[in-house]
Image 1 (cartoon, one colour):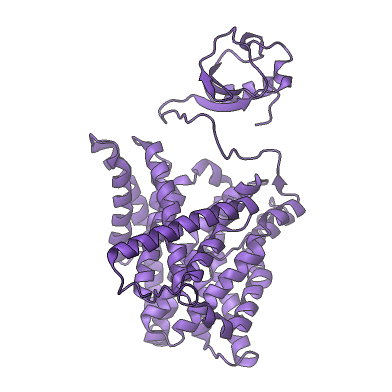
Image 2 (cartoon, helix red, strand yellow):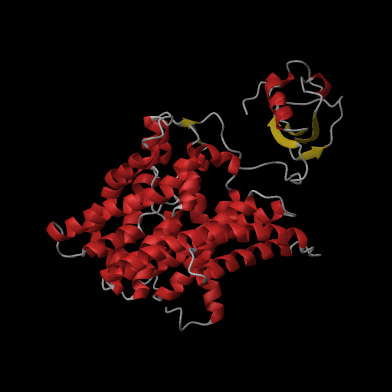
Length: 499
């Protein structure tokens, strides 16, 4: 079945069914700790030409869908990154997302060149082609990593989570720049080296500057525009991010870098309907992740992966056990406050993801001789990385003593309640235990500070507003509000709850 020949209603039906199947697959993967990315890709491959028979073979269409999706993912990732969290690790994160990507590409590229020239000679890459292939795979993916950590209720020690989030969210622009640079070198020849080097620097500078500037303008536009229908604010946000990417790209800057930085600026600023916009962007991120993974899964033909099995496995294992660890250690060795175990864990969490597969479409659309082979190798290496590293992320964290399982994340909240960003109070939820009732069953008997109130109780399926004389029972769910974070901390201390 070719997508170019079937009717629109059939495309909508097929697309909807694929999304539904992917959601159920993602739910299963979340439960068992399998990276959701693997399952989304698998669904696409199963329904592709070598499976059910859906024929999606247009590289430009796949690239277009991937670019749109990656923009949404990067902007949303920037919005979710808090400056206060990344500030202590910002130096390590920036070095890993720039120099770390470059070192990974160079080390892996040299290995690919040597192995295809002297060992696996069925495919013979030149040095530039080998560096192009390595550059495509040089960035890491965070979505599947933290889906697994969330599924297992793991909390990483030594500020590893913000470091990995910062690196994973900001290293795609560098990988994209390297990919485009080596494509230009191959197509234009080495004589244009200095011109391409200048373009490389210009893209970084323009991307960063325009990203910050557009982010600053976006916040002020959102706060000044005064739209009567508040539902349009998230739509305005989505529109702005695509304008940022397009204008920056037309100005010959790095659009992906601009989008991520603008997301950082917007997410760490105050603007009206911020929570609504963030929820909207979270939903759009999941939608576009699924769509991108499905598209890339449909685009690849599994039968074409068999001829590159040997070289793909060799490159995948080399990146996991050699090039990624070497690059990480060379970048963060000077940071002596980080333990050896923490550095090793950062080296292990180097998952390849959807971005490398997307970047692998650029050699295809640029007419590079080995474009098809490069795409298949990148796809295979991504699968190897996700299967080996993705399924062991929680295990390795526990083995290295870097996982704190005493603080599981809440997968479901009984109270759909949020405060405006302008309100400084803090809200939290606790489940009543027999220990909390040691001083008495009434709310007035509980050792709660004066600046904290219990505003709602959920008992079984019933909700009610309590008074001081309300008698509590074990397993009651309480919604509490404190004046600020310090008051909330005091409340947890009085109730002997570990935050």
